[in-house]
Image (tube, rainbow, N blue to C red; front, side):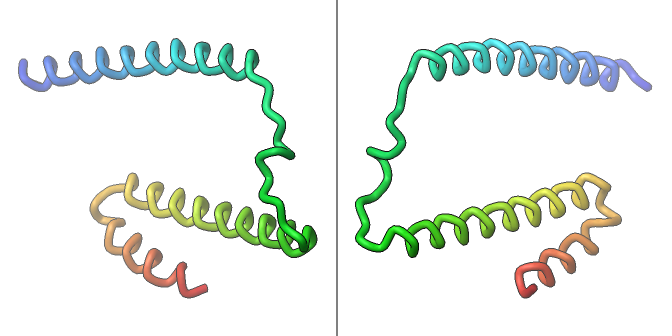
Length: 99
């Protein structure tokens, strides 16, 4: 390892530490804001005449969202495995939406 690599590693470690501290600080602030906020969720719900159809739509959207998130997570994990696995990730990504 050379001095440039050591310096880059030190900068990466500092950046990771700063990001973690920012996440912690902002997470605490967000939690405090949410705790002090009351929301009437029923008032935000669209007024529809067919409540059963709307509820079915909400369930379908939720399931689709979870499936899409799972596909995205799989793609990210495969990409994280390295360039050698990238071609496999592309093939998997092409196949999954068809399922």
